[in-house]
Image (tube, rainbow, N blue to C red):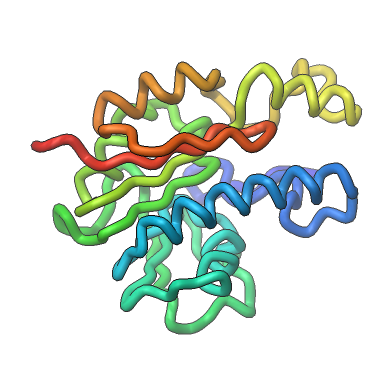
Length: 206
């Protein structure tokens, strides 16, 4: 399967449909991931939400269904025409790069960015933009290397790439993601659903 790419040549969306997989092990892992993200989302109780790097919009759809529903929920990505058809029309969609988000400082109480930073040549710059537009909280996640790559190889995927998913140019350990996060955030919560790291923080004073 060829990974979906934007007009600029960047991978967008899911190479592997982890949300729709029928593999029972993968489904169990996804339940853990979605449970962790949903817990931190609910604890933030945001009135306005931005998801950056939304892909097909499946995580936004899940969070909208889980609630609580904010007054404003926006999503953005390099390409937006892959968004699922059943995404609630109340969710705003924008075409945007994480490096240049078209929103003012402190625009959203919660900014969500899951499974994106590992795709970036400059994750520090991407994180800086997330923190800039966040008023109260930033929720980020990345795969946990090298466990992610090991699990890929155990299921026979990307063997010639030593288990590295196409488009992953950064490889975060748990500590590595926390060190990156602390450059822009004060960490509040940490969840470790196998094989991900999920962090919730508040932007440092500018």
